[in-house]
Image (cartoon, rainbow, N blue to C red; front, side, top):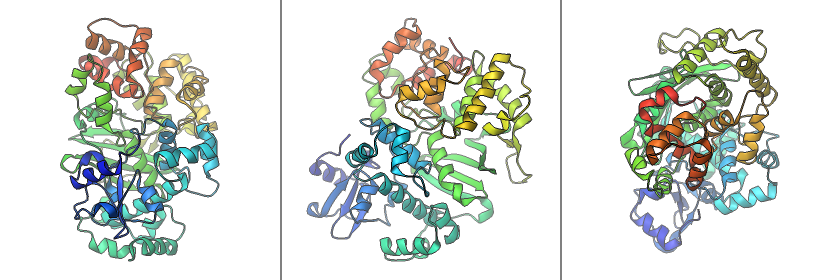
Length: 500
């Protein structure tokens, strides 16, 4: 999707049209500042405005972020760029830190995506108006600004969390961009901030509408005992990254079109990764209006889309964890798979340190791939073939840390997953949908989908006929799958996740 012409962009700016928030930014020549289209400041003159498809492009052009509309709080939209799935996959990898340290190059990023470096740079310039490196650098700057505004973290920790190698470099960059030190930005912030013992709380914006109730219902049905708790409108879970453990709590702020995430974690360097996982799990990067409009072109599906405006495609917190869930759910109910996952956690998960303020339901982190790969026995009452599949999965994930990250095309990702013993087409598609975030993945043989499409069309379907039926839903078949599962709402808690 390309930006509209300048006249259309300027009309959106004049009307402060929220539909363009996150899709375009305006650089104002007279001030040297770039803003979101919803900025409350007086609209600049037409001749002083230049429009950009990303914050990185405006940053590359020499503009600095506005202190009023705060571009770092704009909804991050990736799936709207449906004309380039390669760019969407690259953005997901950059969010995971693919360009944040020495040895992590654009060439290596392109290789993981199955394209040439020059082609990847060309795609980024076409769709984002900036290079991959510029996108990564702008993300770091805006994430740091987000932390400065909304937390009481010491500036040294803010610098580390945002990926700066030194506090001096961090201060120099902020002075260069904002003509003032970071501490001056914090003094100007009116956001109330809790003390350090309450954790780090950030607001993450999304593009409305957002069906929060459906998201919580989906996650609650699959919440792993000891690892996840959903209660009183709040999702909580344990977190383990590089041996450090902690927890998060996520709530909905509908009037601010945001989720609030409170993070308790010892390593500040892991904050970007944690925030990226929250965005992935709750599907905050979706341009849901565009997706719903596309799916509504199907006259049979349209009433069901209207019934659940803002229905998202939940992601997976961790690729390995999600893949284990998928294997546990083969040919059994969601409730039974959840019980098995709880047993696995109790036997092999890492216990959380005692903390009186922690939720009593959070006791362990999910076991790592290495922990399960080296375990003599998993101790679960399951068929031997499925136990062997779990061990093979754990070994594959241990051997390849990038197993559940975007790789080449969706067909290549599916083929790669199917090389693991015990992972068939349904399991691979489900993992691709929720863990790798392939928004065109579609597990056509899922019983819940087949029953859902039977309700939608008023006639039974087969996996083959459903796959053909889903062609018109591309490139967002994953969202169509969520609507089919929702159409089968009475049965979804008991059937979704089982083979046909």
